[in-house]
Image 1 (cartoon, helix red, strand yellow):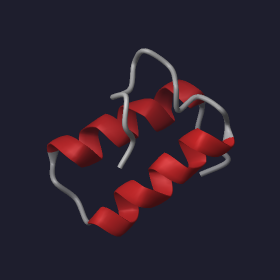
Image 2: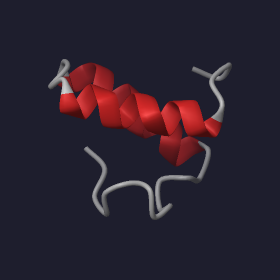
Image 3: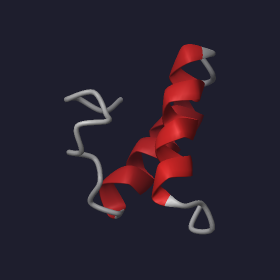
Image 4: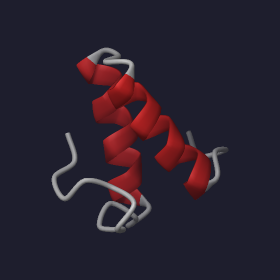
Length: 49
């Protein structure tokens, strides 16, 4: 996931939620968002998975 841009990671998170992909996958994306400190951006829900 480190190769994804921030915008692509955010888009991936939204699409994974929309498609109701496996919770473990969504969790990994949300952890990467937090690691990059973009979990609080206005483009994401207040509470990440």
